[in-house]
Image 1 (cartoon, rainbow, N blue to C red):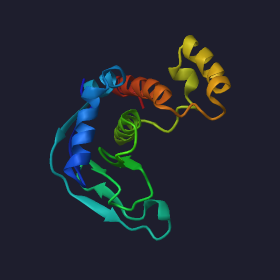
Image 2 (image 1 turned 30 degrees about the vertical axis):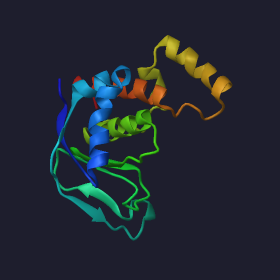
Image 3 (image 1 turned 45 degrees about the vertical axis):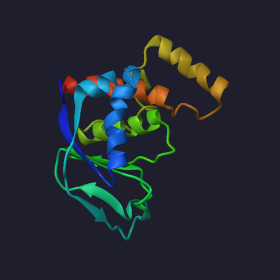
Image 4 (image 1 turned 180 degrees about the vertical axis):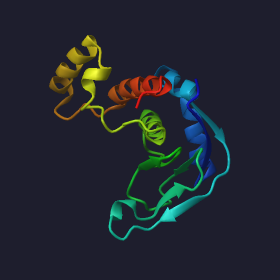
Length: 171
């Protein structure tokens, strides 16, 4: 079931090409993503927002229309790396970032755009983790260090669960 179709538009053809190519190049991570979110090259207006009270969102480009994913690179000086609401999303994708990191950022923002709590991976562990996940989660910081759960491995597992939840109509 496709949750939503998005027209991908961006600050450069290179960044749009990269985002559109990621799902196909990362099949083990992206299968739930590609089934739920349709991405195609398209047009869409994005406005640069100017927030005087929060410098994080200063110069952040955000789509005007629903169904648009706006992607940008280093040429736009926004601090925030992503934002989404009400069927639209925007995110930064830098050339030096790993593909898995960029794909997780895309997935994260698209989940937000359909009303899913993509920021709550840690708080919702009991709901999305299997017993094996819980054991691996407990051992993970012993191997990789404290605070090391924020990786594409864990984000993809959580986002896959959220995608299935959204497809089932969960909020």
